[in-house]
Image (cartoon, rainbow, N blue to C red; front, side):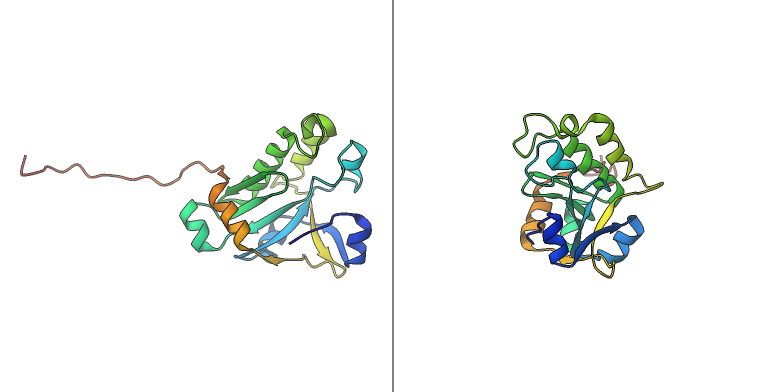
Length: 183
């Protein structure tokens, strides 16, 4: 889904950023769908520091169990246009991992990392918005403040199969020692 984060375009489409939390995301973004989130920072934060557009919003997808089971992940967070995509079993881990990697990345034609461009303290404040204790991020919502949710397409599923899974492996394989040929 092409998304234009320009404030005028969003208003014209009946879209707004509305306060969100993990429970709200889990409630609305069901298996096989995704929503769009953004840290709660001024709309012009990215253009202020030299980016041509808003690089802070991202897609948050709840993977279909057929895809997720094979890669030991339930969530995908990322943006194909920025080349940053993360999968994880826990939503909080996926979002924290995504924004950590975004801060380390050089994107949008700016010759320094996002963290350096925005400011290290500001990037740290953005990461703190994804704390499970007191989340402060926003969810793309309609005028009635209900989150806007889309169906995951094949492109996002293919990305999930190829991107970085930041979970530690939690499955172990145990082999029983057995004697062969009565030895």
